[in-house]
Length: 617
Image (cartoon, rainbow, N blue to C red; front, side, top):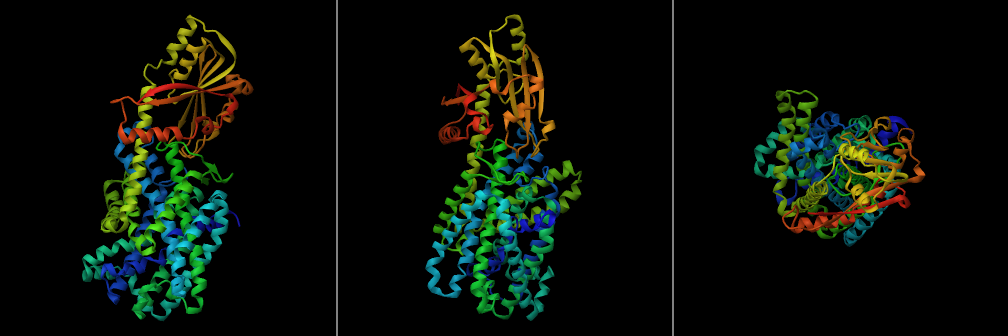
Protein backbone atom coordinates (compact mmCIF):
# COMPACT_ATOMS: atom_id res chain seq x y z
CA UNK A 1 0.00 0.00 0.00
CA UNK A 2 1.53 3.32 -1.02
CA UNK A 3 0.79 6.99 -0.95
CA UNK A 4 -1.04 8.73 1.87
CA UNK A 5 -2.92 5.56 2.89
CA UNK A 6 0.32 3.63 3.29
CA UNK A 7 1.97 6.43 5.25
CA UNK A 8 -1.11 6.74 7.46
CA UNK A 9 -1.01 3.02 8.23
CA UNK A 10 2.72 3.17 9.01
CA UNK A 11 2.13 6.26 11.18
CA UNK A 12 -0.26 4.22 13.33
CA UNK A 13 2.69 2.02 14.19
CA UNK A 14 5.30 4.72 14.73
CA UNK A 15 3.48 7.81 15.94
CA UNK A 16 0.47 6.63 17.92
CA UNK A 17 1.81 3.68 19.87
CA UNK A 18 2.40 5.72 23.03
CA UNK A 19 -0.96 7.45 23.28
CA UNK A 20 -2.68 4.34 21.89
CA UNK A 21 -1.68 2.17 24.83
CA UNK A 22 -2.57 4.68 27.55
CA UNK A 23 -5.94 2.94 28.14
CA UNK A 24 -3.95 0.11 29.74
CA UNK A 25 -3.26 2.16 32.87
CA UNK A 26 -4.62 5.73 32.71
CA UNK A 27 -8.12 5.28 34.16
CA UNK A 28 -6.86 2.63 36.61
CA UNK A 29 -4.29 5.04 38.02
CA UNK A 30 -6.92 7.76 38.45
CA UNK A 31 -8.61 5.56 41.05
CA UNK A 32 -5.38 4.47 42.73
CA UNK A 33 -5.71 4.04 46.50
CA UNK A 34 -3.29 6.90 47.24
CA UNK A 35 -5.73 9.45 45.74
CA UNK A 36 -8.62 8.42 47.98
CA UNK A 37 -11.19 8.66 45.19
CA UNK A 38 -13.94 6.04 45.40
CA UNK A 39 -15.69 4.63 42.35
CA UNK A 40 -19.00 6.47 42.02
CA UNK A 41 -21.09 8.01 39.27
CA UNK A 42 -19.63 11.45 39.99
CA UNK A 43 -16.01 10.29 39.98
CA UNK A 44 -16.34 8.03 36.93
CA UNK A 45 -18.23 10.52 34.76
CA UNK A 46 -16.01 13.34 35.98
CA UNK A 47 -12.79 11.46 35.19
CA UNK A 48 -14.08 10.44 31.77
CA UNK A 49 -15.10 14.02 31.03
CA UNK A 50 -11.58 15.22 31.89
CA UNK A 51 -10.09 12.48 29.71
CA UNK A 52 -12.31 13.31 26.73
CA UNK A 53 -11.68 17.05 26.87
CA UNK A 54 -7.96 16.53 27.43
CA UNK A 55 -7.85 14.49 24.22
CA UNK A 56 -9.85 17.14 22.37
CA UNK A 57 -8.12 20.28 23.66
CA UNK A 58 -4.53 19.08 24.14
CA UNK A 59 -4.04 16.57 21.33
CA UNK A 60 -6.65 17.48 18.71
CA UNK A 61 -6.73 21.27 18.96
CA UNK A 62 -3.29 22.10 20.34
CA UNK A 63 -1.04 19.58 18.61
CA UNK A 64 -2.90 18.28 15.55
CA UNK A 65 -4.50 21.59 14.53
CA UNK A 66 -2.17 24.33 15.85
CA UNK A 67 1.33 23.12 16.75
CA UNK A 68 1.77 20.89 13.70
CA UNK A 69 1.37 24.00 11.55
CA UNK A 70 4.76 25.08 12.90
CA UNK A 71 6.70 22.57 10.87
CA UNK A 72 10.26 23.48 9.96
CA UNK A 73 10.27 22.35 6.32
CA UNK A 74 8.47 19.20 7.38
CA UNK A 75 10.33 18.62 10.66
CA UNK A 76 8.74 18.89 14.08
CA UNK A 77 9.65 18.63 17.73
CA UNK A 78 10.62 21.06 20.45
CA UNK A 79 14.13 21.61 19.04
CA UNK A 80 12.80 22.23 15.56
CA UNK A 81 10.44 24.80 17.05
CA UNK A 82 13.36 26.34 18.95
CA UNK A 83 15.23 26.70 15.64
CA UNK A 84 12.22 28.52 14.20
CA UNK A 85 12.02 31.11 16.99
CA UNK A 86 15.83 31.54 17.19
CA UNK A 87 17.07 30.78 13.66
CA UNK A 88 20.62 32.20 13.85
CA UNK A 89 23.51 32.27 16.31
CA UNK A 90 22.80 35.94 16.94
CA UNK A 91 19.15 35.18 17.66
CA UNK A 92 20.13 32.32 19.94
CA UNK A 93 22.27 34.67 22.00
CA UNK A 94 19.53 37.30 22.09
CA UNK A 95 16.89 34.74 22.98
CA UNK A 96 19.01 32.56 25.22
CA UNK A 97 16.08 32.00 27.58
CA UNK A 98 13.92 30.48 24.83
CA UNK A 99 16.83 28.40 23.54
CA UNK A 100 17.56 27.06 27.03
CA UNK A 101 13.86 26.26 27.45
CA UNK A 102 13.90 24.36 24.15
CA UNK A 103 17.01 22.45 25.18
CA UNK A 104 15.43 21.55 28.52
CA UNK A 105 12.26 20.43 26.72
CA UNK A 106 14.34 18.15 24.50
CA UNK A 107 16.06 16.75 27.59
CA UNK A 108 12.68 16.10 29.24
CA UNK A 109 11.33 14.35 26.14
CA UNK A 110 14.45 12.19 25.96
CA UNK A 111 13.87 11.15 29.58
CA UNK A 112 10.28 10.30 28.67
CA UNK A 113 11.70 8.17 25.87
CA UNK A 114 13.18 5.91 28.53
CA UNK A 115 10.09 5.82 30.76
CA UNK A 116 7.55 5.08 28.00
CA UNK A 117 8.92 1.68 26.92
CA UNK A 118 9.33 0.64 30.54
CA UNK A 119 5.84 1.54 31.77
CA UNK A 120 4.07 0.38 28.59
CA UNK A 121 5.69 -3.06 28.48
CA UNK A 122 5.28 -3.58 32.24
CA UNK A 123 1.59 -2.60 32.12
CA UNK A 124 0.89 -5.12 29.36
CA UNK A 125 2.88 -8.02 30.80
CA UNK A 126 1.23 -7.45 34.20
CA UNK A 127 -1.98 -8.66 32.56
CA UNK A 128 -0.55 -12.16 32.98
CA UNK A 129 -1.27 -11.83 36.70
CA UNK A 130 -5.00 -11.85 35.92
CA UNK A 131 -4.60 -15.16 34.11
CA UNK A 132 -2.89 -16.79 37.08
CA UNK A 133 -1.05 -15.23 40.06
CA UNK A 134 1.75 -17.79 39.63
CA UNK A 135 2.98 -15.84 36.58
CA UNK A 136 3.73 -12.75 38.70
CA UNK A 137 7.39 -13.73 39.17
CA UNK A 138 7.87 -13.80 35.38
CA UNK A 139 6.66 -10.23 34.75
CA UNK A 140 10.08 -8.58 35.22
CA UNK A 141 12.15 -11.10 33.15
CA UNK A 142 9.60 -11.11 30.30
CA UNK A 143 9.49 -7.30 30.25
CA UNK A 144 13.29 -7.06 30.05
CA UNK A 145 13.42 -9.65 27.26
CA UNK A 146 10.81 -7.69 25.27
CA UNK A 147 12.73 -4.44 25.72
CA UNK A 148 15.97 -6.03 24.50
CA UNK A 149 14.21 -7.35 21.39
CA UNK A 150 12.58 -3.96 20.73
CA UNK A 151 15.82 -2.01 20.81
CA UNK A 152 17.62 -4.69 18.82
CA UNK A 153 15.36 -4.17 15.79
CA UNK A 154 15.77 -0.39 15.71
CA UNK A 155 18.71 -0.67 13.33
CA UNK A 156 16.30 -1.94 10.69
CA UNK A 157 14.83 1.58 10.50
CA UNK A 158 11.39 3.11 11.06
CA UNK A 159 10.30 2.27 7.51
CA UNK A 160 10.66 -1.47 8.16
CA UNK A 161 9.37 -1.16 11.72
CA UNK A 162 6.39 0.87 10.49
CA UNK A 163 5.44 -1.81 7.95
CA UNK A 164 5.50 -4.38 10.75
CA UNK A 165 3.76 -2.28 13.39
CA UNK A 166 1.20 -0.35 11.34
CA UNK A 167 -1.18 -3.25 10.64
CA UNK A 168 -0.77 -4.49 14.21
CA UNK A 169 -1.79 -1.11 15.63
CA UNK A 170 -4.75 -0.94 13.28
CA UNK A 171 -5.94 -4.23 14.79
CA UNK A 172 -5.23 -2.83 18.27
CA UNK A 173 -7.38 0.26 17.73
CA UNK A 174 -10.21 -1.83 16.26
CA UNK A 175 -10.10 -4.07 19.35
CA UNK A 176 -10.09 -1.00 21.63
CA UNK A 177 -13.22 0.29 19.94
CA UNK A 178 -14.99 -3.09 19.99
CA UNK A 179 -14.25 -3.71 23.70
CA UNK A 180 -15.49 -0.25 24.61
CA UNK A 181 -18.56 -0.34 22.36
CA UNK A 182 -19.85 -3.55 23.98
CA UNK A 183 -19.79 -1.96 27.43
CA UNK A 184 -21.29 1.32 26.21
CA UNK A 185 -24.16 -0.59 24.62
CA UNK A 186 -24.88 -2.17 27.99
CA UNK A 187 -24.76 1.16 29.86
CA UNK A 188 -25.22 4.12 27.44
CA UNK A 189 -25.62 6.59 30.33
CA UNK A 190 -21.84 6.82 30.36
CA UNK A 191 -22.08 9.00 27.23
CA UNK A 192 -23.12 11.81 29.56
CA UNK A 193 -19.41 12.16 30.39
CA UNK A 194 -18.95 14.12 27.16
CA UNK A 195 -20.62 17.01 28.99
CA UNK A 196 -17.82 19.10 30.60
CA UNK A 197 -20.11 19.91 33.54
CA UNK A 198 -19.34 16.45 34.91
CA UNK A 199 -15.66 17.47 35.21
CA UNK A 200 -16.79 20.50 37.20
CA UNK A 201 -18.92 18.32 39.50
CA UNK A 202 -15.94 16.00 39.99
CA UNK A 203 -13.76 18.88 41.21
CA UNK A 204 -16.58 20.27 43.33
CA UNK A 205 -17.00 17.00 45.22
CA UNK A 206 -13.38 15.82 45.49
CA UNK A 207 -11.58 19.20 45.35
CA UNK A 208 -7.90 18.68 46.29
CA UNK A 209 -8.04 14.95 45.60
CA UNK A 210 -9.37 15.62 42.10
CA UNK A 211 -6.51 18.03 41.46
CA UNK A 212 -3.99 15.39 42.53
CA UNK A 213 -5.72 12.86 40.26
CA UNK A 214 -4.93 15.11 37.29
CA UNK A 215 -1.44 13.64 37.53
CA UNK A 216 -2.89 10.34 36.32
CA UNK A 217 -5.42 11.73 33.88
CA UNK A 218 -2.59 13.46 32.01
CA UNK A 219 -1.33 9.99 31.07
CA UNK A 220 -3.97 9.95 28.32
CA UNK A 221 -2.14 12.72 26.42
CA UNK A 222 1.44 11.58 26.92
CA UNK A 223 1.94 10.96 23.19
CA UNK A 224 1.38 14.56 22.10
CA UNK A 225 5.02 15.64 22.08
CA UNK A 226 6.09 12.39 20.42
CA UNK A 227 3.46 13.03 17.75
CA UNK A 228 5.04 16.41 16.99
CA UNK A 229 8.61 15.09 17.19
CA UNK A 230 7.78 12.32 14.69
CA UNK A 231 6.39 14.80 12.15
CA UNK A 232 9.46 14.47 9.92
CA UNK A 233 8.97 10.72 9.60
CA UNK A 234 5.61 10.89 7.82
CA UNK A 235 4.38 14.44 7.30
CA UNK A 236 1.35 16.35 8.51
CA UNK A 237 -1.46 14.80 6.47
CA UNK A 238 -0.95 11.09 7.35
CA UNK A 239 -0.59 11.95 11.04
CA UNK A 240 -3.78 14.01 11.07
CA UNK A 241 -5.74 11.38 9.12
CA UNK A 242 -4.57 8.66 11.48
CA UNK A 243 -5.60 10.65 14.55
CA UNK A 244 -9.01 11.87 13.41
CA UNK A 245 -10.00 8.75 11.47
CA UNK A 246 -8.76 5.94 13.71
CA UNK A 247 -6.98 6.79 16.94
CA UNK A 248 -9.23 9.42 18.54
CA UNK A 249 -12.52 7.52 18.00
CA UNK A 250 -11.01 4.25 19.27
CA UNK A 251 -9.56 5.87 22.41
CA UNK A 252 -12.75 7.74 23.30
CA UNK A 253 -14.90 4.63 22.85
CA UNK A 254 -12.54 2.50 24.94
CA UNK A 255 -12.30 4.99 27.81
CA UNK A 256 -16.08 5.34 27.85
CA UNK A 257 -16.35 1.54 27.83
CA UNK A 258 -14.07 1.29 30.86
CA UNK A 259 -16.22 3.88 32.59
CA UNK A 260 -19.39 1.93 31.79
CA UNK A 261 -17.76 -1.18 33.28
CA UNK A 262 -16.87 0.67 36.49
CA UNK A 263 -20.41 2.03 36.85
CA UNK A 264 -21.74 -1.53 36.58
CA UNK A 265 -18.99 -3.19 38.66
CA UNK A 266 -16.84 -0.89 40.88
CA UNK A 267 -14.58 -3.84 41.82
CA UNK A 268 -13.28 -3.85 38.20
CA UNK A 269 -11.18 -0.82 39.15
CA UNK A 270 -8.30 -3.24 39.77
CA UNK A 271 -7.80 -3.54 35.99
CA UNK A 272 -10.67 -1.94 34.04
CA UNK A 273 -8.98 -2.38 30.68
CA UNK A 274 -8.35 -6.13 30.77
CA UNK A 275 -11.68 -6.81 32.49
CA UNK A 276 -13.46 -5.34 29.46
CA UNK A 277 -12.78 -8.66 27.76
CA UNK A 278 -14.60 -11.91 28.50
CA UNK A 279 -12.56 -14.54 30.33
CA UNK A 280 -11.91 -16.60 27.19
CA UNK A 281 -10.35 -13.56 25.45
CA UNK A 282 -8.08 -12.51 28.31
CA UNK A 283 -4.94 -14.35 27.19
CA UNK A 284 -5.20 -13.19 23.54
CA UNK A 285 -5.80 -9.64 24.79
CA UNK A 286 -2.68 -9.77 27.00
CA UNK A 287 -0.64 -10.95 24.00
CA UNK A 288 -2.09 -8.24 21.76
CA UNK A 289 -1.54 -5.59 24.45
CA UNK A 290 2.07 -6.71 24.87
CA UNK A 291 2.66 -6.38 21.14
CA UNK A 292 0.96 -2.97 21.16
CA UNK A 293 3.19 -1.73 23.98
CA UNK A 294 6.23 -2.71 21.97
CA UNK A 295 4.84 -0.41 19.31
CA UNK A 296 4.11 2.25 21.94
CA UNK A 297 7.76 2.38 22.80
CA UNK A 298 8.61 2.97 19.15
CA UNK A 299 6.88 6.37 19.10
CA UNK A 300 9.21 7.78 21.73
CA UNK A 301 12.32 5.97 20.49
CA UNK A 302 11.98 7.34 16.96
CA UNK A 303 11.16 10.75 18.41
CA UNK A 304 14.32 10.67 20.53
CA UNK A 305 16.36 9.75 17.43
CA UNK A 306 14.96 12.80 15.64
CA UNK A 307 15.64 15.07 18.63
CA UNK A 308 19.19 13.78 19.03
CA UNK A 309 19.93 14.40 15.34
CA UNK A 310 18.55 17.92 15.54
CA UNK A 311 20.50 18.63 18.75
CA UNK A 312 23.72 17.42 17.12
CA UNK A 313 23.27 19.54 14.00
CA UNK A 314 22.36 22.59 16.06
CA UNK A 315 25.57 22.15 18.06
CA UNK A 316 23.88 21.23 21.34
CA UNK A 317 25.55 17.81 21.67
CA UNK A 318 28.75 16.23 20.27
CA UNK A 319 28.74 14.60 16.84
CA UNK A 320 27.33 11.06 16.96
CA UNK A 321 27.08 8.28 14.42
CA UNK A 322 23.82 8.67 12.47
CA UNK A 323 22.55 6.00 10.09
CA UNK A 324 19.88 7.03 7.58
CA UNK A 325 17.50 4.09 7.25
CA UNK A 326 15.47 5.29 4.27
CA UNK A 327 16.57 6.52 0.86
CA UNK A 328 13.24 8.28 0.36
CA UNK A 329 12.38 9.85 3.73
CA UNK A 330 15.03 12.15 5.19
CA UNK A 331 13.78 12.02 8.80
CA UNK A 332 14.17 8.28 9.28
CA UNK A 333 17.42 7.80 11.21
CA UNK A 334 19.03 5.41 13.66
CA UNK A 335 21.61 6.43 16.28
CA UNK A 336 23.32 3.37 17.79
CA UNK A 337 24.76 5.15 20.84
CA UNK A 338 21.39 6.68 21.75
CA UNK A 339 19.58 3.40 21.13
CA UNK A 340 21.72 1.30 23.46
CA UNK A 341 21.88 4.00 26.13
CA UNK A 342 18.06 4.09 26.19
CA UNK A 343 17.96 0.31 26.54
CA UNK A 344 20.26 0.37 29.57
CA UNK A 345 18.13 3.04 31.24
CA UNK A 346 14.90 1.16 30.47
CA UNK A 347 16.19 -2.04 32.02
CA UNK A 348 17.31 -0.05 35.06
CA UNK A 349 13.82 1.46 35.40
CA UNK A 350 12.11 -1.93 35.20
CA UNK A 351 14.43 -3.38 37.83
CA UNK A 352 14.20 -0.29 40.02
CA UNK A 353 10.45 0.48 39.97
CA UNK A 354 9.27 -3.13 39.32
CA UNK A 355 5.63 -2.22 38.42
CA UNK A 356 3.74 0.10 36.09
CA UNK A 357 1.97 1.66 39.08
CA UNK A 358 5.29 2.70 40.60
CA UNK A 359 6.52 3.97 37.24
CA UNK A 360 3.33 5.98 36.72
CA UNK A 361 4.55 8.26 39.49
CA UNK A 362 7.69 8.98 37.45
CA UNK A 363 5.65 9.53 34.33
CA UNK A 364 3.94 12.81 33.62
CA UNK A 365 6.39 15.37 35.01
CA UNK A 366 8.53 15.28 31.88
CA UNK A 367 5.53 15.22 29.55
CA UNK A 368 3.68 18.15 31.11
CA UNK A 369 6.80 20.31 31.45
CA UNK A 370 7.64 19.76 27.77
CA UNK A 371 4.05 20.57 26.77
CA UNK A 372 4.27 23.86 28.66
CA UNK A 373 7.59 24.72 26.97
CA UNK A 374 6.02 23.98 23.58
CA UNK A 375 3.14 26.34 24.40
CA UNK A 376 5.61 29.13 25.26
CA UNK A 377 7.61 28.63 22.06
CA UNK A 378 4.55 28.36 19.82
CA UNK A 379 3.16 31.61 21.25
CA UNK A 380 6.32 33.42 20.10
CA UNK A 381 6.17 31.76 16.69
CA UNK A 382 2.47 32.54 16.25
CA UNK A 383 3.09 36.23 17.00
CA UNK A 384 6.05 36.58 14.66
CA UNK A 385 5.31 34.20 11.80
CA UNK A 386 1.53 33.79 11.71
CA UNK A 387 0.85 37.41 12.62
CA UNK A 388 -1.46 36.57 15.53
CA UNK A 389 -2.43 39.47 17.74
CA UNK A 390 -2.03 39.34 21.50
CA UNK A 391 -5.75 38.71 21.97
CA UNK A 392 -5.63 35.60 19.81
CA UNK A 393 -2.40 34.36 21.39
CA UNK A 394 -3.74 34.77 24.93
CA UNK A 395 -7.18 33.28 24.21
CA UNK A 396 -5.94 30.22 22.30
CA UNK A 397 -2.37 29.45 23.31
CA UNK A 398 -2.94 30.94 26.75
CA UNK A 399 -5.68 28.32 27.27
CA UNK A 400 -3.26 25.58 26.23
CA UNK A 401 -0.63 26.90 28.64
CA UNK A 402 -3.17 27.06 31.47
CA UNK A 403 -4.09 23.40 30.91
CA UNK A 404 -0.40 22.45 30.72
CA UNK A 405 0.28 24.33 33.94
CA UNK A 406 -2.57 22.59 35.75
CA UNK A 407 -1.30 19.17 34.67
CA UNK A 408 2.30 20.08 35.55
CA UNK A 409 1.32 21.41 38.99
CA UNK A 410 -0.47 18.16 39.77
CA UNK A 411 2.46 16.08 38.58
CA UNK A 412 4.94 18.02 40.70
CA UNK A 413 3.26 16.45 43.71
CA UNK A 414 4.52 13.07 42.45
CA UNK A 415 8.21 14.03 42.58
CA UNK A 416 8.90 12.17 45.87
CA UNK A 417 7.14 9.04 44.54
CA UNK A 418 9.18 8.77 41.33
CA UNK A 419 8.86 12.02 39.45
CA UNK A 420 12.38 12.78 40.64
CA UNK A 421 13.72 10.38 38.01
CA UNK A 422 12.30 12.37 35.09
CA UNK A 423 13.78 15.58 36.50
CA UNK A 424 17.10 13.90 37.28
CA UNK A 425 17.38 12.47 33.76
CA UNK A 426 16.39 15.76 32.12
CA UNK A 427 18.68 17.75 34.40
CA UNK A 428 21.62 15.49 33.56
CA UNK A 429 21.04 15.80 29.82
CA UNK A 430 20.51 19.55 30.10
CA UNK A 431 23.78 19.90 32.04
CA UNK A 432 25.53 17.87 29.34
CA UNK A 433 24.12 20.03 26.52
CA UNK A 434 24.87 23.37 28.19
CA UNK A 435 28.39 22.18 29.05
CA UNK A 436 29.03 21.21 25.43
CA UNK A 437 27.62 24.49 24.08
CA UNK A 438 29.64 26.61 26.50
CA UNK A 439 32.78 24.53 25.99
CA UNK A 440 32.59 24.80 22.21
CA UNK A 441 32.00 28.53 22.50
CA UNK A 442 35.14 28.90 24.66
CA UNK A 443 37.16 26.75 22.23
CA UNK A 444 35.95 28.79 19.26
CA UNK A 445 36.84 32.01 21.06
CA UNK A 446 40.30 30.86 22.13
CA UNK A 447 41.20 29.21 18.83
CA UNK A 448 40.17 32.42 17.06
CA UNK A 449 42.54 34.69 18.98
CA UNK A 450 44.87 36.41 16.53
CA UNK A 451 42.90 35.28 13.48
CA UNK A 452 43.96 37.05 10.31
CA UNK A 453 41.32 38.29 7.84
CA UNK A 454 41.51 36.51 4.50
CA UNK A 455 41.61 39.72 2.50
CA UNK A 456 44.63 40.97 4.44
CA UNK A 457 46.39 37.62 4.00
CA UNK A 458 45.78 37.52 0.24
CA UNK A 459 47.15 41.06 -0.07
CA UNK A 460 50.35 39.95 1.70
CA UNK A 461 50.67 36.99 -0.70
CA UNK A 462 50.53 39.35 -3.67
CA UNK A 463 53.43 41.40 -2.25
CA UNK A 464 55.56 38.42 -1.21
CA UNK A 465 54.70 35.26 -3.16
CA UNK A 466 54.72 31.95 -1.25
CA UNK A 467 56.29 28.75 -2.58
CA UNK A 468 53.57 26.52 -4.07
CA UNK A 469 53.36 22.72 -4.28
CA UNK A 470 51.21 20.55 -6.55
CA UNK A 471 47.64 19.63 -5.72
CA UNK A 472 44.75 21.18 -3.85
CA UNK A 473 44.41 21.74 -0.12
CA UNK A 474 41.04 22.11 1.60
CA UNK A 475 41.18 23.75 5.04
CA UNK A 476 38.11 23.51 7.26
CA UNK A 477 37.14 26.39 9.52
CA UNK A 478 33.63 27.29 10.71
CA UNK A 479 34.06 31.08 10.41
CA UNK A 480 34.19 32.38 6.82
CA UNK A 481 36.45 35.29 5.96
CA UNK A 482 39.40 34.48 8.22
CA UNK A 483 42.53 32.36 7.81
CA UNK A 484 42.13 28.97 9.57
CA UNK A 485 44.64 28.33 12.40
CA UNK A 486 45.50 24.96 10.78
CA UNK A 487 46.61 26.80 7.62
CA UNK A 488 48.84 29.18 9.60
CA UNK A 489 50.40 26.24 11.47
CA UNK A 490 51.04 24.31 8.25
CA UNK A 491 52.53 27.38 6.51
CA UNK A 492 54.91 28.01 9.38
CA UNK A 493 56.02 24.39 9.41
CA UNK A 494 56.47 23.82 5.64
CA UNK A 495 56.98 27.36 4.38
CA UNK A 496 54.84 26.45 1.35
CA UNK A 497 51.21 26.09 0.33
CA UNK A 498 49.42 24.00 -2.27
CA UNK A 499 48.84 25.17 -5.82
CA UNK A 500 45.14 25.64 -5.07
CA UNK A 501 43.83 26.37 -1.57
CA UNK A 502 40.19 26.17 -0.54
CA UNK A 503 39.10 27.67 2.77
CA UNK A 504 35.94 25.71 3.50
CA UNK A 505 33.20 26.68 5.93
CA UNK A 506 30.32 24.33 6.60
CA UNK A 507 27.34 26.16 8.09
CA UNK A 508 24.11 24.73 9.46
CA UNK A 509 20.90 26.40 8.35
CA UNK A 510 17.80 26.93 10.46
CA UNK A 511 16.01 24.81 7.85
CA UNK A 512 16.03 21.01 8.07
CA UNK A 513 17.30 20.64 4.49
CA UNK A 514 18.93 22.89 1.91
CA UNK A 515 18.45 22.15 -1.84
CA UNK A 516 21.69 21.07 -3.54
CA UNK A 517 21.33 23.90 -6.07
CA UNK A 518 21.54 26.47 -3.24
CA UNK A 519 24.06 24.66 -1.09
CA UNK A 520 27.36 26.25 -2.16
CA UNK A 521 28.82 29.67 -2.70
CA UNK A 522 32.33 30.34 -4.01
CA UNK A 523 34.41 33.49 -3.66
CA UNK A 524 37.58 33.86 -5.73
CA UNK A 525 40.22 35.52 -3.54
CA UNK A 526 42.99 35.67 -6.15
CA UNK A 527 46.30 33.77 -6.36
CA UNK A 528 44.26 30.53 -6.58
CA UNK A 529 42.81 30.93 -3.09
CA UNK A 530 39.07 30.30 -2.72
CA UNK A 531 36.51 30.78 0.05
CA UNK A 532 33.81 28.10 -0.25
CA UNK A 533 30.75 28.03 1.97
CA UNK A 534 28.58 24.91 2.05
CA UNK A 535 25.20 25.21 3.75
CA UNK A 536 23.37 22.17 5.13
CA UNK A 537 20.08 21.81 6.94
CA UNK A 538 20.07 20.73 10.56
CA UNK A 539 18.60 17.34 9.60
CA UNK A 540 21.31 16.64 6.98
CA UNK A 541 24.73 15.08 7.30
CA UNK A 542 27.43 16.81 5.23
CA UNK A 543 29.16 14.82 2.50
CA UNK A 544 31.99 17.16 1.56
CA UNK A 545 33.77 15.32 -1.31
CA UNK A 546 30.49 14.93 -3.17
CA UNK A 547 29.60 18.59 -2.62
CA UNK A 548 33.03 19.78 -3.79
CA UNK A 549 32.83 17.64 -6.93
CA UNK A 550 30.08 19.98 -8.13
CA UNK A 551 32.60 22.82 -7.97
CA UNK A 552 35.36 21.24 -10.08
CA UNK A 553 34.67 23.51 -13.03
CA UNK A 554 34.69 26.66 -10.93
CA UNK A 555 37.55 25.89 -8.52
CA UNK A 556 39.47 23.71 -11.02
CA UNK A 557 40.87 21.01 -8.77
CA UNK A 558 41.44 17.28 -9.09
CA UNK A 559 39.62 15.31 -6.36
CA UNK A 560 42.27 12.56 -6.58
CA UNK A 561 45.02 15.07 -5.72
CA UNK A 562 43.23 16.88 -2.91
CA UNK A 563 44.29 16.89 0.73
CA UNK A 564 41.89 17.79 3.51
CA UNK A 565 43.37 19.62 6.50
CA UNK A 566 41.50 19.59 9.79
CA UNK A 567 42.35 21.59 12.87
CA UNK A 568 42.38 19.13 15.74
CA UNK A 569 42.06 21.05 18.99
CA UNK A 570 44.03 19.80 21.94
CA UNK A 571 42.12 21.19 24.87
CA UNK A 572 44.18 21.96 27.98
CA UNK A 573 43.14 23.45 31.27
CA UNK A 574 43.99 26.95 32.39
CA UNK A 575 42.52 28.26 35.60
CA UNK A 576 40.11 31.15 35.21
CA UNK A 577 39.81 30.90 31.42
CA UNK A 578 36.42 29.31 30.75
CA UNK A 579 35.28 26.02 32.30
CA UNK A 580 36.17 24.52 35.65
CA UNK A 581 35.38 21.61 37.94
CA UNK A 582 32.85 19.02 36.79
CA UNK A 583 31.96 20.96 33.63
CA UNK A 584 35.61 21.00 32.57
CA UNK A 585 36.04 17.25 33.07
CA UNK A 586 32.75 16.50 31.32
CA UNK A 587 33.70 18.66 28.34
CA UNK A 588 37.09 16.89 28.09
CA UNK A 589 35.28 13.55 28.01
CA UNK A 590 32.75 14.66 25.40
CA UNK A 591 35.43 16.32 23.27
CA UNK A 592 37.63 13.21 23.25
CA UNK A 593 34.78 10.85 22.42
CA UNK A 594 32.93 12.92 19.82
CA UNK A 595 32.74 11.48 16.34
CA UNK A 596 35.76 12.61 14.33
CA UNK A 597 35.32 15.48 11.86
CA UNK A 598 36.77 13.32 9.08
CA UNK A 599 34.13 10.66 9.65
CA UNK A 600 31.36 13.20 10.10
CA UNK A 601 32.21 15.02 6.85
CA UNK A 602 32.73 11.64 5.09
CA UNK A 603 36.25 12.47 3.99
CA UNK A 604 38.59 9.86 2.46
CA UNK A 605 40.79 8.95 5.43
CA UNK A 606 43.91 8.44 3.31
CA UNK A 607 43.80 12.12 2.28
CA UNK A 608 43.12 13.71 5.66
CA UNK A 609 45.77 15.55 7.69
CA UNK A 610 45.06 16.59 11.28
CA UNK A 611 46.97 19.64 12.48
CA UNK A 612 47.02 20.05 16.23
CA UNK A 613 46.01 23.35 17.75
CA UNK A 614 46.37 23.86 21.51
CA UNK A 615 43.38 25.59 23.10
CA UNK A 616 43.31 26.62 26.76
CA UNK A 617 39.94 26.57 28.50
